[in-house]
Image (cartoon, rainbow, N blue to C red; front, side, top):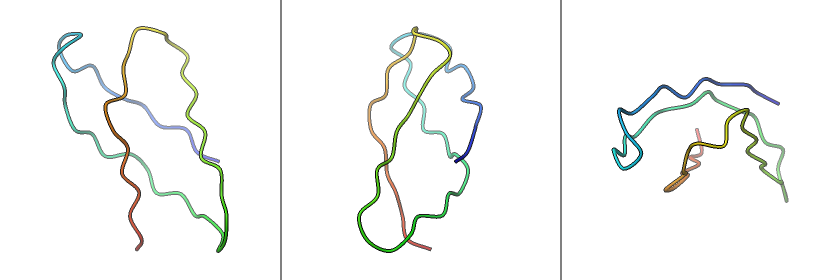
Length: 51
């Protein structure tokens, strides 16, 4: 489990790529859940990479 801060992008339609923290997933099937304390945001895409 991890908690990360997403900084303001300057506007509702001002997209910005931001890098979050690293999380460790176990081999096999995993479920990733995003929760927000604010409802004034949009997620355009999410990329997970293997390190």
